[in-house]
Image (cartoon, rainbow, N blue to C red):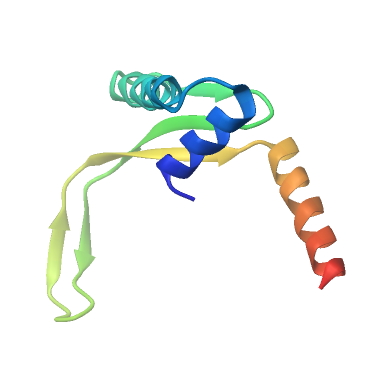
Length: 100
């Protein structure tokens, strides 16, 4: 599913125009990015948590050449799904398997 598909689905379900829905979706994405960029996490109950984790500098190995490579300290965004979200997905997939 692409961002355009998400916009279409939300617009058809709410009656809001696609243009307005796209602005809302873009606004959500921008808010998440800005918050994480500033070091703040986001918790959406029943959905999940966005955080930024610090990765320490380390020596790594290029798998193709075997050469040692220095990887500097960096930060990576992470997302952890809530228990409720995981349970809903698990139940839906089990029901789907039964239909096949």
